[in-house]
Amino acid sequence: MPTIAYFLGIAVRMFFNDHDPPHFHARYQGFRARIRIADGEIIDGKLPPTVARVLKEWTDLRRDALMRNWQAARTDGSLERIAGLE
Image (tube, rainbow, N blue to C red):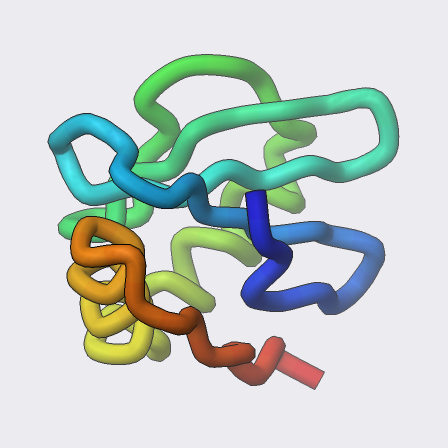
């Protein structure tokens, strides 16, 4: 699972050929969650509230790049790195 972003200690990853809805995987310390690209909400898993808010904001800012990566991952294309919030 390629890491497409890493910022503020948060690793953002995306699986190739993953299932709908479009989402990414986030890891922070011992926490893990799947985040929906459409609205930045947690699908499942758990993150500290502050990290969840940061990822929601980041998702809103980077939605186009995230969707490009989602489409590339579905067709085994190459994924681009996405800037964080720093």
